[in-house]
Image (tube, rainbow, N blue to C red; front, side, top):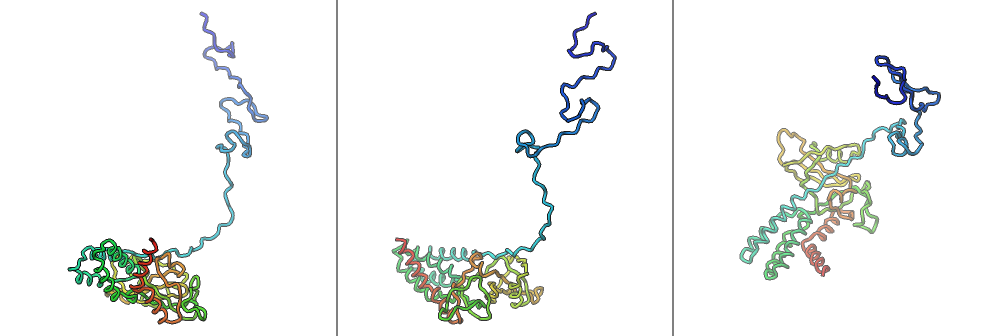
Length: 327
């Protein structure tokens, strides 16, 4: 019987059961000198890629594009970076104090004035920031409640007699360059360069509630030595509930150094009851540490200037002037 016609290009002599004839490749291999590839043989090697050629799969953005050569030159050794640990100001005491001030003012009446004004006077003022906060709250109350203006005026008089700069101002002994002759209280040199002289600054805000401290050490001198050691890499300790008292504040070799001592040491502490907080004088603003812009040749000069600029009356006048200039 006649079978159906097969596809074109077949061998007429092929019969069922015999090996099928090999197909001719429809196109020649593109490699120079190559021969037709047949099944069962290894494929010919690919043509080398030209990475500078644009377009196609090997062009810009193509997967065939190779990356830049790996750097195999000398590697610089690791260098210990400058210590970047800096103490951060703890404002919790200010928050607590402001809450107490507002609570007293909200209860203030003529009948309760004697008792409540005494409570206000007994609030510890630990910084100029606390003083200005108290004045601002009293001032705002007097403006909002003009009928009680006489009460708040009497309160200001009582506070001015009780709160002085000596409550929170600290005199700082320093080895910075002294001001030139005739410029006592002149501007401090940038960076606080050290000298062999003894001069003084003042601060109206020495924080005693640092959450991170360095130590413990056996003496105040050891704390200062650690602070000025340029190779020292401090590992701060979390203060948590530890009660500390201020021992000294000083500036040595461009470093602001605060030394604290444990109030209630235990037998396990031994002699290691001293802690320190320190940073470059140039970073004082970053660390929230106020310093007098000028330096003084004697302690009495520094004390006089500090008391004058941090009194209750001066701060109240500053507040009144500030509000007047807003109008």
